Image 1 (spheres, rainbow, N blue to C red):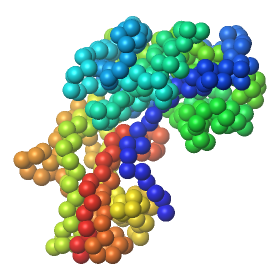
Image 2 (image 1 turned 30 degrees about the vertical axis):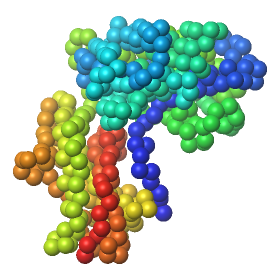
Image 3 (image 1 turned 135 degrees about the vertical axis):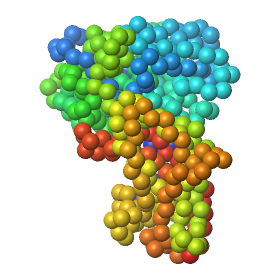
Image 4 (image 1 turned 90 degrees about the vertical axis):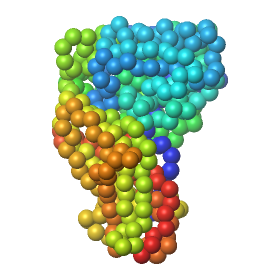
Length: 403
Ligand SMILES: [Zn+2]
């Protein structure tokens, strides 16, 4: 039976290429052969990168950014300067605010470990305010022998913050020698195969290519050793925004006119709680989530899903198709969200306007069993015929089934 993790693992953590680079300091001789000719010129095709349209900030958005405790003013100044590189091309404002600002979109932790990573685009909004949305390892990446790579790393991570994906996820972009890739990353990083699949080998949906071509010059492209590819093409580390990065930034965050390829997006906020009540009279669990939904200019179809989780963190196998999400006992409601909507469900003190219900007869557990509800929202992506996780998930307290 599937075990779930009651954490925020639903977020897409995007790690930097430079996790491999980081090891350079630790195992320089072993890595030497990969790095000695990293400036080799390679054949490139004109292109402009990959972005996840569903996690884009609104055009012209002001992103507030703060540092979590730590980091010298020198290093902080470097980060602030490098991040601003995006503002030249994208219609977005990156505003660094004082450390004691209670609420921000982006939070950076300057560390001496944990690599370089960022949450993807608006997924930052769903992270707890006490947690970082970006990690920058200032020992592994800010080295004297390759200081420009530090700048490139900061720009790369802010690319993720704006919704840019790893360029190597472009369909057909790289002809991987998967055995060589696993061999390298298993040896030199603490990543397992799942992580390697997600960070290096994953090929994204065609739709996110936005009609663009693969761009090996993108700052979002990992360094690739020639031994990693079947055709022995090496991709050196990129140090600057490519022409493709610049044109994609301008297409998705245009300074004038409309965004290219707008998709429906929703923003969930003011989530106060999701309540679950065992209701003996009605013979089931009554679930009342409370939150505000805001949509952009496109019509969107949302699924609000409430799934049963046992007290040992397992889902419960569904016995019917009706109360079933992914094979597990759940209920859901679909909601058509009109363009530019701003709707609050179950506002505290106001009349109840949203409820989900799961009859006990659908939950094959004994009376008094403790369960909680996993609540999440999916966006139906008609174009790709799948459900898009909008990065939002929460869990209720445990309650006892009371038949
Ligand atoms: Zn990355």
